Amino acid sequence: MLKRFLLSWLSVAIAVALTAWLLPGMDVDGGFFAVVLIAAVWGIINAVLGTILRVLSLPLTLMTLGLFSLVINAILLMITAWIVDRLEVDNFFVALVAALIISVVSTVVLALFTRKTART
Image (cartoon, rainbow, N blue to C red; front, top):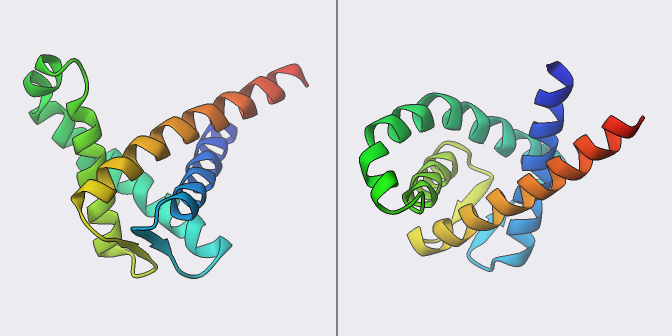
């Protein structure tokens, strides 16, 4: 379980770094440790506040066939940027695109990590 947690944390950190590199409206200042800190804060906010928001917005998420979950992730990313000084997100549209990229990249990276560790 700890291994899965650390792999998930690492995949989100890689996704945040790649997203900051790709999107001009999202900046991370501080290098590797800043990205790891952002991933940790994102995870805590996602676990606590994200769960509450997802439960409250379940009807809207069902009506939009799950697309509203991207809006929730964008809101959580904006909250993370508000808490962590090393992360800057220019506006909500940038947060929405960043949430999409982070979700896709972290899922792919985690799948690659778990596939590789399952073989060994």
